[in-house]
Image 1 (cartoon, rainbow, N blue to C red):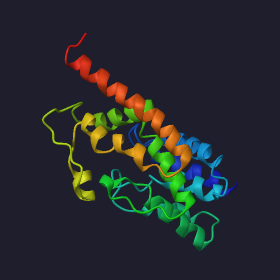
Image 2 (cartoon, rainbow, N blue to C red):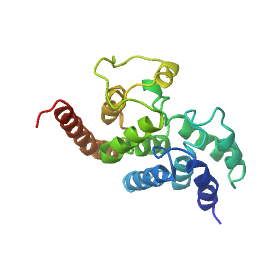
Image 3 (cartoon, rainbow, N blue to C red):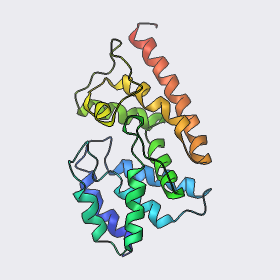
Image 4 (tube, rainbow, N blue to C red):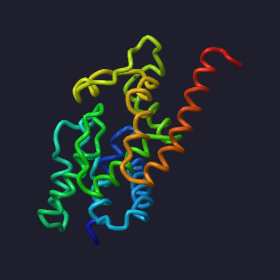
Length: 209
């Protein structure tokens, strides 16, 4: 069994303990996005990319308080220390963190970051936003809530904002943060769909029938 299949088997059960916004289906979609980008970015190391995708949320601070899952699984894979470090560096660059993201210094990091962010956009991104909001007991929308554009990582993660507010604090910003040309192309399409959704949501909730 190769590293990717071994890793897949080790992570699937972990992700399926998370809510629907970060379950194993999320990982499968991000893998598809990454593979689509790698059809263009042919110099990328496919094993590094796919392992980073499989591992990128197993130690997500929204669900766990340490990096034990990621480190334990990496230790079980047949990889050099350099490859393990590369994967960890890629994972560290994925998070949006309220706009406090780390620099993507490799093509693998750019691909994984774009692939993950694509899953936060479009129809799936909308579904994930409300799935996460529902799991956390958040309001659908709150017109009185101030949209924060300059915040620390702790501030971004600590406040339980309404789901629609999250569109303005993160999702609508992602299109302009894509690193690869394929990522930019796909993000534009999904961004436009989200704008249409928000317009429709506003019309329906305001009684514009």
